[in-house]
Image 1 (cartoon, rainbow, N blue to C red):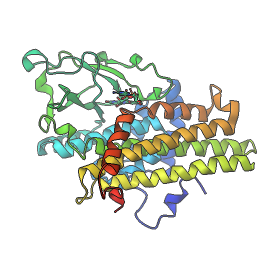
Image 2: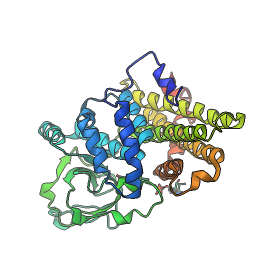
Image 3: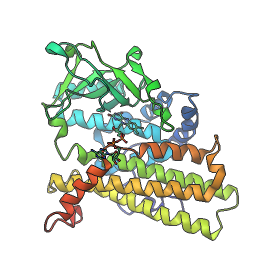
Image 4: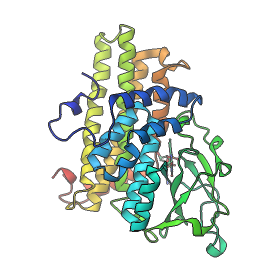
Length: 366
Ligand SMILES: Cc1cc2nc3c(=O)[nH]c(=O)nc-3n(C[C@H](O)[C@H](O)[C@H](O)COP(=O)(O)OP(=O)(O)OC[C@H]3O[C@@H](n4cnc5c(N)ncnc54)[C@H](O)[C@@H]3O)c2cc1C
């Protein structure tokens, strides 16, 4: 029995459309240690996914397969999972808002080595089309995958009329990974990217002004973040249990009770994420229902992941905090990744939909 047992015993669909072989996940897991230390770039893990057909497979993924794939990769290597989520999100945005020739061109580019990201968080100054609309001005912060992402979908001119543009981002002179002064997720090579002076004519525009904010595709997609969070929580528990077994401490009743009660909640989180993912593509669902379920999945996985970190700290004690501790690194990465935008506002929004009106309580469980 492993932390993923619930999914193996499921009668219905196969675990993932993607070729996520155990050997691939193991290779990603091993690579994560060196990537965190800065010994090897995360681009090598991106290559592993490309060689396995995962990057080009992003075009055909169903939502439940996406959820399971992100859980698995998040459990093996959360930083790589973060980058894969960006790639999948970008592919979906191009599929949703891109013109047909652009879709074909991007498919071709991915087969030839392109790796995508979505950079929405604005830097100081924010990204705009500049005076005269001829050259981009400003930049992005928290941009993940500097040096690995070849093309990013960026938000331009923030606000209700925000536009989406696909731009090449391979110019290392414009990237500043030193801006990521965080205790975790160092391997994501996140930081600033300065677009100032990039010709507006080099942007491939996606959709019209404001399309990016349309639901259920915007907030309605945060279940992908939740999938990574819950997968990483499972990976952390797996790693902690293995360490406890090696120390001959997993048989203690206190350890079993503490870790199993969290694992049960992790499984519940996986189920909620899957439900949110599937609901996002059900035609008879309202955007409000999809958004509130997606938010709930994200906030629930945040809570459960915090519980998992706490339980692992209590179970392992000080060895968890040594510089070379594998559980320590995983917990650091996870606690940073749990910090996603506007959690309190999202909770209010979900509550307004589910509790603020008659007959809405069952949501997507109707
Ligand atoms: C590893 C990692 C990779 C990332 N990669 C990318 C990327 O590639 N592209 C990208 O665009 N972004 C990326 N991001 C950034 C992400 O999209 C969010 O911008 C970021 O995670 C927001 O975190 P925050 O804690 O600053 O959120 P905030 O929204 O600032 O929330 C922090 C806390 O502040 C409080 N708060 C917020 N607003 C209010 C308010 N109005 N009133 C009262 N309290 C308030 C809430 O309690 C909240 O929990 C990444 C983030 C991480 C962690």
